[in-house]
Image (cartoon, rainbow, N blue to C red; front, side, top):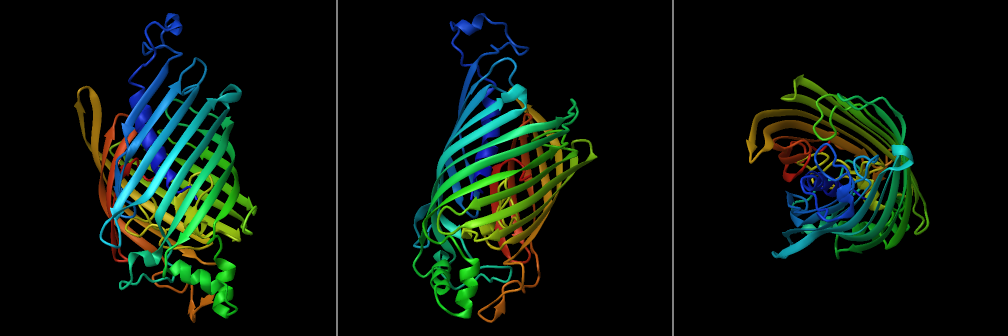
Length: 439
Protein backbone atom coordinates (compact mmCIF):
# COMPACT_ATOMS: atom_id res chain seq x y z
CA UNK A 1 0.00 0.00 0.00
CA UNK A 2 1.76 3.14 1.15
CA UNK A 3 4.50 1.45 3.16
CA UNK A 4 7.59 3.12 1.42
CA UNK A 5 6.38 6.64 2.29
CA UNK A 6 8.10 6.23 5.67
CA UNK A 7 11.42 7.12 4.03
CA UNK A 8 10.00 10.28 2.49
CA UNK A 9 8.40 11.45 5.72
CA UNK A 10 11.68 10.95 7.57
CA UNK A 11 13.72 12.77 4.93
CA UNK A 12 11.35 15.72 5.10
CA UNK A 13 12.55 16.36 8.64
CA UNK A 14 15.98 17.26 7.30
CA UNK A 15 14.58 19.61 4.69
CA UNK A 16 12.34 21.32 7.22
CA UNK A 17 15.26 21.90 9.55
CA UNK A 18 17.60 23.05 6.81
CA UNK A 19 15.14 25.37 5.07
CA UNK A 20 14.44 27.14 8.34
CA UNK A 21 18.04 28.38 8.24
CA UNK A 22 17.58 30.26 4.96
CA UNK A 23 15.18 33.15 4.31
CA UNK A 24 14.65 33.47 0.56
CA UNK A 25 12.34 36.48 0.68
CA UNK A 26 13.79 39.20 -1.61
CA UNK A 27 15.10 42.17 0.38
CA UNK A 28 12.96 44.55 -1.65
CA UNK A 29 9.73 42.57 -1.16
CA UNK A 30 6.78 44.54 0.28
CA UNK A 31 6.49 42.18 3.27
CA UNK A 32 9.92 43.15 4.54
CA UNK A 33 8.39 46.31 5.91
CA UNK A 34 6.49 44.07 8.34
CA UNK A 35 7.88 43.46 11.79
CA UNK A 36 10.47 40.71 12.09
CA UNK A 37 9.73 37.69 14.25
CA UNK A 38 11.72 36.71 17.34
CA UNK A 39 14.40 35.15 15.13
CA UNK A 40 14.82 38.30 13.05
CA UNK A 41 12.99 36.83 10.04
CA UNK A 42 10.06 38.15 8.06
CA UNK A 43 6.92 36.51 9.56
CA UNK A 44 5.42 36.27 6.05
CA UNK A 45 8.53 34.83 4.45
CA UNK A 46 8.74 32.16 1.73
CA UNK A 47 11.40 29.50 2.29
CA UNK A 48 12.80 26.95 -0.14
CA UNK A 49 15.23 24.05 0.39
CA UNK A 50 16.53 21.08 -1.60
CA UNK A 51 18.77 18.29 -0.34
CA UNK A 52 19.95 14.89 -1.59
CA UNK A 53 18.08 11.79 -0.39
CA UNK A 54 20.61 9.00 0.21
CA UNK A 55 19.85 5.67 1.93
CA UNK A 56 20.72 1.99 1.92
CA UNK A 57 18.93 -1.15 3.00
CA UNK A 58 19.29 -4.82 2.16
CA UNK A 59 15.78 -5.08 0.71
CA UNK A 60 15.87 -2.22 -1.81
CA UNK A 61 19.57 -1.45 -2.29
CA UNK A 62 21.30 1.93 -2.55
CA UNK A 63 18.86 4.85 -2.61
CA UNK A 64 19.51 8.19 -4.28
CA UNK A 65 17.50 11.25 -5.29
CA UNK A 66 16.44 14.68 -4.13
CA UNK A 67 13.88 16.03 -1.71
CA UNK A 68 12.77 19.64 -1.40
CA UNK A 69 10.23 21.96 0.20
CA UNK A 70 8.65 25.34 -0.45
CA UNK A 71 6.96 26.82 2.64
CA UNK A 72 4.96 30.00 3.24
CA UNK A 73 4.99 31.39 6.80
CA UNK A 74 2.32 33.68 8.20
CA UNK A 75 1.49 35.04 11.67
CA UNK A 76 -1.16 32.95 13.44
CA UNK A 77 -0.30 29.72 11.65
CA UNK A 78 2.03 27.04 13.05
CA UNK A 79 4.44 25.72 11.97
CA UNK A 80 3.72 27.44 8.61
CA UNK A 81 0.78 28.57 6.48
CA UNK A 82 1.37 25.88 3.88
CA UNK A 83 4.21 23.75 2.58
CA UNK A 84 4.89 21.90 -0.67
CA UNK A 85 7.23 18.91 -0.50
CA UNK A 86 8.57 16.90 -3.43
CA UNK A 87 10.65 13.76 -3.75
CA UNK A 88 12.39 12.18 -6.74
CA UNK A 89 13.97 8.94 -5.58
CA UNK A 90 15.12 5.51 -6.77
CA UNK A 91 17.18 2.58 -5.51
CA UNK A 92 19.74 0.45 -7.35
CA UNK A 93 20.29 -3.21 -6.56
CA UNK A 94 21.99 -6.19 -8.18
CA UNK A 95 19.64 -8.15 -10.45
CA UNK A 96 19.37 -11.95 -10.81
CA UNK A 97 21.19 -11.81 -14.17
CA UNK A 98 24.27 -10.26 -12.57
CA UNK A 99 23.59 -6.67 -13.61
CA UNK A 100 22.02 -3.74 -11.78
CA UNK A 101 18.35 -2.81 -11.68
CA UNK A 102 16.27 0.04 -10.25
CA UNK A 103 14.44 -2.00 -7.65
CA UNK A 104 12.30 0.82 -6.27
CA UNK A 105 11.14 4.18 -7.63
CA UNK A 106 9.25 6.91 -5.75
CA UNK A 107 8.13 10.35 -6.95
CA UNK A 108 5.58 12.50 -5.16
CA UNK A 109 4.28 15.98 -4.39
CA UNK A 110 2.69 16.79 -1.00
CA UNK A 111 0.69 19.88 0.02
CA UNK A 112 0.54 20.33 3.80
CA UNK A 113 -1.95 22.86 5.19
CA UNK A 114 -1.87 23.20 9.00
CA UNK A 115 -3.59 25.87 11.07
CA UNK A 116 -7.03 25.54 9.48
CA UNK A 117 -10.17 26.16 11.55
CA UNK A 118 -8.31 28.21 14.15
CA UNK A 119 -5.35 25.78 14.25
CA UNK A 120 -7.55 22.74 14.93
CA UNK A 121 -7.44 21.13 11.46
CA UNK A 122 -4.45 20.03 9.39
CA UNK A 123 -4.96 18.71 5.84
CA UNK A 124 -2.28 16.89 3.85
CA UNK A 125 -2.75 15.91 0.19
CA UNK A 126 -0.39 13.87 -1.98
CA UNK A 127 -0.04 12.69 -5.57
CA UNK A 128 2.70 10.34 -6.63
CA UNK A 129 4.07 7.43 -8.60
CA UNK A 130 5.80 4.34 -7.24
CA UNK A 131 7.24 1.19 -8.69
CA UNK A 132 8.60 -1.71 -6.66
CA UNK A 133 9.99 -4.27 -9.10
CA UNK A 134 11.23 -6.58 -6.33
CA UNK A 135 8.04 -6.73 -4.23
CA UNK A 136 8.19 -9.86 -2.11
CA UNK A 137 5.80 -12.81 -1.93
CA UNK A 138 6.88 -15.98 -0.08
CA UNK A 139 3.45 -17.52 0.36
CA UNK A 140 0.68 -17.17 2.93
CA UNK A 141 0.86 -17.63 6.67
CA UNK A 142 3.63 -18.15 9.17
CA UNK A 143 4.82 -21.56 7.96
CA UNK A 144 6.33 -20.46 4.64
CA UNK A 145 9.93 -21.52 4.03
CA UNK A 146 12.46 -19.66 1.91
CA UNK A 147 14.25 -22.04 -0.45
CA UNK A 148 17.96 -21.58 -1.17
CA UNK A 149 18.05 -23.21 -4.61
CA UNK A 150 15.74 -20.82 -6.49
CA UNK A 151 16.25 -17.62 -8.45
CA UNK A 152 15.59 -14.34 -6.59
CA UNK A 153 12.69 -13.67 -8.97
CA UNK A 154 10.91 -16.75 -7.59
CA UNK A 155 9.83 -14.73 -4.54
CA UNK A 156 9.24 -11.42 -6.34
CA UNK A 157 6.69 -9.56 -8.45
CA UNK A 158 6.56 -6.10 -10.01
CA UNK A 159 4.01 -3.56 -8.72
CA UNK A 160 3.50 -0.15 -10.37
CA UNK A 161 1.07 2.24 -8.68
CA UNK A 162 0.33 5.91 -9.31
CA UNK A 163 -1.83 7.27 -6.49
CA UNK A 164 -3.59 10.26 -4.91
CA UNK A 165 -4.21 10.66 -1.16
CA UNK A 166 -5.73 13.22 1.17
CA UNK A 167 -6.18 13.13 4.94
CA UNK A 168 -7.06 15.51 7.72
CA UNK A 169 -6.24 15.64 11.45
CA UNK A 170 -8.66 17.45 13.76
CA UNK A 171 -7.76 18.43 17.32
CA UNK A 172 -10.32 17.13 19.81
CA UNK A 173 -8.50 17.98 23.04
CA UNK A 174 -5.17 19.63 23.86
CA UNK A 175 -3.56 20.13 27.27
CA UNK A 176 0.02 20.38 26.04
CA UNK A 177 2.73 22.22 28.00
CA UNK A 178 6.25 23.34 27.19
CA UNK A 179 7.56 20.09 28.70
CA UNK A 180 5.45 17.60 26.77
CA UNK A 181 2.51 17.13 24.43
CA UNK A 182 -0.88 15.99 25.71
CA UNK A 183 -3.23 15.90 22.75
CA UNK A 184 -6.08 13.82 21.31
CA UNK A 185 -6.80 14.06 17.58
CA UNK A 186 -9.20 12.43 15.14
CA UNK A 187 -8.12 11.74 11.56
CA UNK A 188 -9.79 10.70 8.35
CA UNK A 189 -8.70 10.29 4.77
CA UNK A 190 -9.23 8.79 1.35
CA UNK A 191 -6.82 7.35 -1.20
CA UNK A 192 -6.95 6.07 -4.77
CA UNK A 193 -4.39 3.75 -6.38
CA UNK A 194 -4.12 2.29 -9.85
CA UNK A 195 -2.19 -0.95 -9.44
CA UNK A 196 -0.43 -2.67 -12.29
CA UNK A 197 0.73 -6.13 -11.20
CA UNK A 198 3.38 -7.87 -13.32
CA UNK A 199 4.16 -11.47 -12.36
CA UNK A 200 7.58 -12.87 -13.22
CA UNK A 201 7.59 -16.09 -15.22
CA UNK A 202 7.88 -19.10 -12.93
CA UNK A 203 7.52 -17.04 -9.76
CA UNK A 204 5.70 -18.35 -6.71
CA UNK A 205 2.96 -15.74 -7.05
CA UNK A 206 2.39 -16.71 -10.70
CA UNK A 207 2.09 -20.35 -9.64
CA UNK A 208 -0.30 -19.55 -6.80
CA UNK A 209 -2.43 -17.35 -9.04
CA UNK A 210 -2.78 -20.21 -11.58
CA UNK A 211 -3.56 -22.70 -8.80
CA UNK A 212 -6.26 -20.41 -7.40
CA UNK A 213 -8.16 -20.78 -10.67
CA UNK A 214 -8.28 -24.59 -10.39
CA UNK A 215 -11.18 -26.57 -8.94
CA UNK A 216 -9.11 -28.37 -6.31
CA UNK A 217 -8.95 -28.14 -2.48
CA UNK A 218 -5.67 -26.20 -2.68
CA UNK A 219 -7.11 -24.00 -5.41
CA UNK A 220 -10.11 -23.18 -3.23
CA UNK A 221 -7.79 -22.15 -0.37
CA UNK A 222 -5.88 -19.72 -2.58
CA UNK A 223 -9.06 -18.49 -4.25
CA UNK A 224 -10.31 -17.51 -0.78
CA UNK A 225 -7.12 -15.92 0.57
CA UNK A 226 -5.21 -14.57 -2.46
CA UNK A 227 -6.62 -11.52 -4.26
CA UNK A 228 -5.41 -8.50 -6.21
CA UNK A 229 -3.00 -10.37 -8.47
CA UNK A 230 -4.31 -8.68 -11.66
CA UNK A 231 -4.26 -5.00 -12.59
CA UNK A 232 -6.89 -3.10 -10.59
CA UNK A 233 -8.07 0.18 -9.10
CA UNK A 234 -8.32 0.58 -5.35
CA UNK A 235 -10.24 3.15 -3.32
CA UNK A 236 -9.62 3.12 0.44
CA UNK A 237 -10.95 5.20 3.33
CA UNK A 238 -9.16 5.58 6.67
CA UNK A 239 -10.11 7.03 10.05
CA UNK A 240 -9.23 6.86 13.72
CA UNK A 241 -7.76 8.52 16.80
CA UNK A 242 -4.26 9.67 17.79
CA UNK A 243 -3.21 10.21 21.43
CA UNK A 244 0.19 11.84 22.03
CA UNK A 245 1.95 12.54 25.36
CA UNK A 246 5.58 12.56 24.14
CA UNK A 247 8.05 15.23 25.23
CA UNK A 248 9.61 15.33 21.72
CA UNK A 249 8.29 14.23 18.34
CA UNK A 250 11.57 12.94 16.86
CA UNK A 251 13.69 11.95 19.89
CA UNK A 252 11.29 11.35 22.81
CA UNK A 253 12.58 10.45 26.26
CA UNK A 254 9.20 9.91 27.94
CA UNK A 255 5.52 9.65 27.08
CA UNK A 256 3.43 7.62 24.64
CA UNK A 257 2.02 7.87 21.13
CA UNK A 258 -0.94 5.64 20.28
CA UNK A 259 -2.88 5.17 17.05
CA UNK A 260 -6.23 3.43 16.77
CA UNK A 261 -7.28 3.25 13.13
CA UNK A 262 -9.65 1.59 10.70
CA UNK A 263 -9.46 1.33 6.92
CA UNK A 264 -11.91 0.03 4.33
CA UNK A 265 -12.26 -0.43 0.59
CA UNK A 266 -15.74 -0.54 -1.04
CA UNK A 267 -14.45 -2.81 -3.82
CA UNK A 268 -14.71 -0.57 -6.88
CA UNK A 269 -12.68 -3.06 -8.93
CA UNK A 270 -11.79 -6.78 -8.97
CA UNK A 271 -14.09 -7.50 -6.02
CA UNK A 272 -11.55 -6.10 -3.53
CA UNK A 273 -13.99 -5.30 -0.72
CA UNK A 274 -12.19 -5.41 2.61
CA UNK A 275 -11.74 -3.69 5.96
CA UNK A 276 -9.01 -3.55 8.57
CA UNK A 277 -8.20 -2.21 12.02
CA UNK A 278 -4.90 -1.38 13.72
CA UNK A 279 -3.70 -0.54 17.20
CA UNK A 280 -0.14 0.81 17.37
CA UNK A 281 1.26 2.13 20.64
CA UNK A 282 4.73 3.49 21.42
CA UNK A 283 6.10 3.95 24.94
CA UNK A 284 9.22 5.87 26.01
CA UNK A 285 10.89 5.97 29.43
CA UNK A 286 14.05 7.85 30.42
CA UNK A 287 16.53 5.74 32.38
CA UNK A 288 19.19 8.47 32.65
CA UNK A 289 18.04 11.86 31.42
CA UNK A 290 18.18 12.05 27.63
CA UNK A 291 21.33 9.92 27.57
CA UNK A 292 19.64 6.55 28.05
CA UNK A 293 16.05 5.82 26.97
CA UNK A 294 13.99 2.62 26.84
CA UNK A 295 11.64 2.64 23.83
CA UNK A 296 8.98 0.06 23.00
CA UNK A 297 6.35 -0.37 20.29
CA UNK A 298 3.50 -2.88 20.01
CA UNK A 299 1.42 -3.36 16.84
CA UNK A 300 -1.73 -5.37 16.23
CA UNK A 301 -3.47 -5.46 12.84
CA UNK A 302 -6.44 -7.41 11.48
CA UNK A 303 -8.00 -7.60 8.01
CA UNK A 304 -11.35 -8.94 6.76
CA UNK A 305 -12.68 -9.65 3.29
CA UNK A 306 -11.03 -9.85 -0.13
CA UNK A 307 -7.66 -8.28 0.62
CA UNK A 308 -5.11 -7.51 -2.15
CA UNK A 309 -1.87 -9.43 -1.82
CA UNK A 310 0.31 -6.40 -1.00
CA UNK A 311 -2.01 -5.32 1.83
CA UNK A 312 -1.50 -8.73 3.48
CA UNK A 313 2.09 -7.59 4.09
CA UNK A 314 1.24 -4.14 5.53
CA UNK A 315 -0.13 -2.72 8.77
CA UNK A 316 -1.66 0.58 9.91
CA UNK A 317 -4.15 3.16 8.73
CA UNK A 318 -2.47 6.44 9.68
CA UNK A 319 1.10 5.16 10.10
CA UNK A 320 1.89 2.61 7.38
CA UNK A 321 4.49 -0.10 7.91
CA UNK A 322 5.42 -3.56 6.70
CA UNK A 323 4.30 -6.86 8.18
CA UNK A 324 7.02 -8.72 10.09
CA UNK A 325 10.14 -7.95 8.08
CA UNK A 326 12.15 -4.99 6.79
CA UNK A 327 14.14 -2.10 8.20
CA UNK A 328 11.23 -0.47 10.06
CA UNK A 329 9.55 -3.65 11.32
CA UNK A 330 11.52 -6.79 12.20
CA UNK A 331 15.08 -6.01 11.21
CA UNK A 332 17.09 -8.89 9.76
CA UNK A 333 13.95 -10.43 8.21
CA UNK A 334 13.30 -9.77 4.52
CA UNK A 335 10.72 -7.12 3.63
CA UNK A 336 7.28 -8.68 2.91
CA UNK A 337 8.59 -12.03 4.12
CA UNK A 338 5.18 -12.93 5.65
CA UNK A 339 1.60 -12.39 4.41
CA UNK A 340 -1.56 -12.83 6.47
CA UNK A 341 -4.80 -11.26 7.70
CA UNK A 342 -3.66 -11.11 11.34
CA UNK A 343 -0.34 -9.56 12.40
CA UNK A 344 1.38 -8.73 15.67
CA UNK A 345 4.77 -6.99 15.95
CA UNK A 346 6.81 -5.91 18.96
CA UNK A 347 9.97 -3.79 19.15
CA UNK A 348 12.19 -2.99 22.15
CA UNK A 349 15.11 -0.55 21.88
CA UNK A 350 17.66 0.78 24.36
CA UNK A 351 18.78 4.17 22.99
CA UNK A 352 21.90 5.97 24.19
CA UNK A 353 23.46 9.37 23.48
CA UNK A 354 27.03 9.66 24.72
CA UNK A 355 29.15 12.04 22.62
CA UNK A 356 27.83 15.60 22.08
CA UNK A 357 29.94 17.87 19.88
CA UNK A 358 29.69 20.95 17.65
CA UNK A 359 30.86 21.73 14.12
CA UNK A 360 30.59 25.28 12.75
CA UNK A 361 28.05 26.16 15.41
CA UNK A 362 25.86 23.11 14.62
CA UNK A 363 25.02 20.72 17.48
CA UNK A 364 25.55 16.97 17.05
CA UNK A 365 25.26 13.97 19.34
CA UNK A 366 26.61 10.49 18.60
CA UNK A 367 24.73 7.58 20.09
CA UNK A 368 23.92 3.91 19.79
CA UNK A 369 20.99 1.52 20.06
CA UNK A 370 20.51 -2.15 20.86
CA UNK A 371 17.23 -3.82 19.94
CA UNK A 372 15.06 -6.91 19.75
CA UNK A 373 12.23 -7.14 17.19
CA UNK A 374 9.63 -9.89 16.90
CA UNK A 375 6.49 -10.51 14.88
CA UNK A 376 4.26 -13.07 13.27
CA UNK A 377 1.23 -13.43 11.02
CA UNK A 378 -1.75 -15.74 10.72
CA UNK A 379 -3.07 -16.45 7.22
CA UNK A 380 -6.71 -16.48 8.34
CA UNK A 381 -8.95 -16.64 11.41
CA UNK A 382 -9.00 -20.44 11.47
CA UNK A 383 -6.35 -23.01 10.73
CA UNK A 384 -6.04 -23.66 6.98
CA UNK A 385 -4.31 -26.57 5.26
CA UNK A 386 -2.53 -26.07 1.95
CA UNK A 387 -0.70 -28.82 0.07
CA UNK A 388 -1.01 -31.09 3.10
CA UNK A 389 0.54 -28.60 5.52
CA UNK A 390 -0.93 -26.07 7.94
CA UNK A 391 -0.25 -22.50 6.84
CA UNK A 392 0.38 -21.34 10.41
CA UNK A 393 1.94 -24.38 12.05
CA UNK A 394 5.52 -23.08 12.13
CA UNK A 395 7.95 -23.19 15.06
CA UNK A 396 9.29 -20.93 16.38
CA UNK A 397 6.05 -19.02 16.13
CA UNK A 398 7.60 -15.55 15.96
CA UNK A 399 10.17 -14.18 13.53
CA UNK A 400 12.87 -12.53 15.66
CA UNK A 401 15.56 -10.02 14.78
CA UNK A 402 18.30 -8.66 17.05
CA UNK A 403 21.02 -6.09 16.55
CA UNK A 404 22.88 -2.96 17.56
CA UNK A 405 23.45 0.22 15.58
CA UNK A 406 24.58 3.83 15.60
CA UNK A 407 22.67 7.12 15.76
CA UNK A 408 23.88 10.59 14.79
CA UNK A 409 21.59 13.40 15.87
CA UNK A 410 21.93 16.82 14.23
CA UNK A 411 20.09 19.59 16.03
CA UNK A 412 16.60 18.79 17.29
CA UNK A 413 14.89 16.95 14.45
CA UNK A 414 17.42 15.17 12.22
CA UNK A 415 18.68 11.67 13.13
CA UNK A 416 20.75 9.36 10.92
CA UNK A 417 20.45 5.68 11.81
CA UNK A 418 22.59 2.70 10.81
CA UNK A 419 21.12 -0.63 11.93
CA UNK A 420 22.66 -4.02 11.12
CA UNK A 421 20.20 -6.72 12.10
CA UNK A 422 20.30 -10.51 12.29
CA UNK A 423 17.28 -12.79 12.40
CA UNK A 424 17.89 -15.69 14.74
CA UNK A 425 14.84 -17.49 13.32
CA UNK A 426 15.38 -16.86 9.60
CA UNK A 427 19.21 -16.90 9.87
CA UNK A 428 19.41 -13.85 7.60
CA UNK A 429 21.26 -10.53 7.90
CA UNK A 430 19.98 -7.07 7.02
CA UNK A 431 21.67 -3.66 6.93
CA UNK A 432 19.63 -0.44 7.06
CA UNK A 433 20.93 3.13 6.74
CA UNK A 434 18.24 5.80 6.73
CA UNK A 435 16.79 8.73 8.65
CA UNK A 436 15.04 8.85 12.06
CA UNK A 437 14.30 6.19 14.63
CA UNK A 438 11.98 3.48 13.30
CA UNK A 439 9.36 4.66 15.84
